[in-house]
Length: 231
Image (cartoon, rainbow, N blue to C red):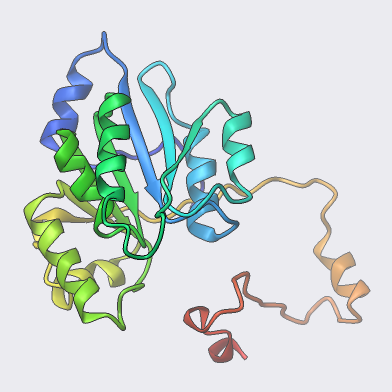
């Protein structure tokens, strides 16, 4: 799918904010980090398409800046860091809440890997709209993470976005998130037109005939990407 203007989930609180054309809506996107990855890259590309007359977007990373921070900052998007001092630093949620309150955030949008601190900080800060996007089954080996993802989503989140129908089914059937809260918005990929690209020439360079089929995968070399299945 191509990237067009970002599709917004239907949320009563968001609709109320959108109804006032005189005020910009402050949106904070909260991610585990900003290293190079599919989820992070999609967000960077998507933020470039937001209407800056209506939205002020910023990003908070919970684990350092990462390689994509510079790209966001060059685009005029503020990047904030809210690291843990150590693994037992349970006060981070309060620091994050203070950041959300200081920046007068209207919408918090968290992503896979941010299952607890984002939503709790948003509630503490009185953020009116809380959204979460799940990119995959990152908590499949942790029953505890799945449990509080279910509880926090059902109690506090306005919407949970799944990037596929299969993931939506998993969130509803396995994690037990309220079906009324789960919607599907597939990831978009911006395909650049390259007039100099010639598929036949590339096959020739690889020593292949023009009739041979090439297929592949672009993903990190980690078990969850399942390169073994492709091979």
